[in-house]
Structure formats: structure tokens, C-alpha cells
Image (cartoon, rainbow, N blue to C red; front, side, top):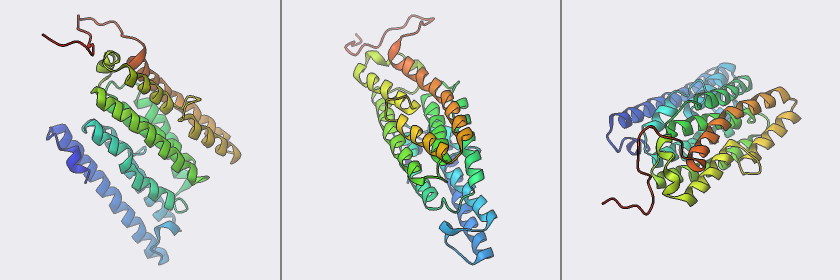
Length: 283
């Protein structure tokens, strides 16, 4: 049902994004069925929430990671988000991730914990690293989503409810970011620079939501990260907690860059250009 929304502009990039999304999701769904069939072949049990065969658990973990867009199955997500309108990108980043997250929650006993932890660390690292040099806001938000998926999955084996809490808060904050960007019609950092003059109050809210996504206290986004670090430390996983905390600094940089461009200053420009004042009406 999301495919017509992705491709409604009929632009070649939108058609390509819809094709990539369909092929990836179809492959992941086939892998879930294959993991269930493999488990039934070896154990006689079709219930995917109680898998015991190691190969089936490995395939199921990879399939759900592919549906979510986790590293190393992340390549489709930034491209699909870049080829979609902002409202469709909002659906892809929040509502369309709810079914795989629910599946992740239901099958966490059957998943491979070592593979899950490795993918979580890689997602946090690559999501932060790849977002550093982006100028397209939709791609920055895509890598932000990948980075947050790392936080959600690293705690899954120890406290699945924390995964759901993290997802709900992430979806709520991302909702406000996408809707704000859609209202002020911004797709690139270069246009975000002049958006303060059009809607100062919205840009002030954008600053707070971006810093919340970064996980800065005392904003909302800090709460799930603090709880996750606390739980990892209780489970004697302090090195992993330290690692993912340090990797979140990569994401902090590009969130601060977005906030800086949106609210703090108007950088010098090599060409003369007219400021986009809200009250300005062209002759």
C-alpha cells in the first residue's frame, strides 16, 4: 500500500525507490517464510516465536534486519527515503517500521543474540558515520533512523520493553521533525539556512526536536538512551554500553549541524541572493 505513495510523482528516482522497497521487502518476507520452513523441517515446530534450530534463528534475524534497514542490509533505506516525498518518508520511518519491530519483539527468544548485538553496534556506527557528509535532509534522517535502530536492538535480548519505548519516543520525535520540514518546504541544508525568516517558531521547535533526537538531556530523547545504558551496565555489558554511547557522538554532530543551519546563523554566501522574508511579496 505504500508503493503508490512512494511513486506518485512518477519521477524516475521515485519509481526506482518504489522498486527497491518492493524487492527488499519481498526478499525479507521470503526469508522469514524460509526460516520457518527450515525450523519445521528440523524440529516439526512451525511457531516462529519458539525456534530452536540455529540456522533458522540466523535467517530470521537477518530477514527482520533487512525489513528494518539495519546494517549490513541498510543500503535500500536511504535511497528509498531520498526518492520519496517528506510525508511518505515519515510513514517509512515510523509506521512502516512498526510491523517489523513488533515481529522483533515477539520473536526475540528465537533470534541470534550475538548477530543482533553485532548488527546493533554496526548500525549505530555506520548510521552516525554516513550521516556526517550528507547535504540532503532526507538522507540525514535515514541514517539517523539506522543509528536509532542500533539502540533499539542492542537492548532487545535483555529488556524488550525498552526497545518498544525507544521506538515509540523515536517515532513521536521524528513525526514532529518531518511535519516541520514539510511545512517549511525544506529538503536540503542550503534551503534550511534561510528557513528561519519564514517560520521562526517552527524553526525553534525544530531545534528542540533535533537536539532531542540527538539524546541531549534534559530532552525526551535522552530518557531511552539513559535507560538502555543503565540496563546494559546491570547486565555486565559495560564495554558495549560505552561503545554505543561513544558512537552516538557521531550522530550528535550532524544533528547539531542541522540545528545550527536551521536556527543559529546565516552563513556567508558567494553570490548575492534575496532573503526569504515571510512578509516579502515579489513585484
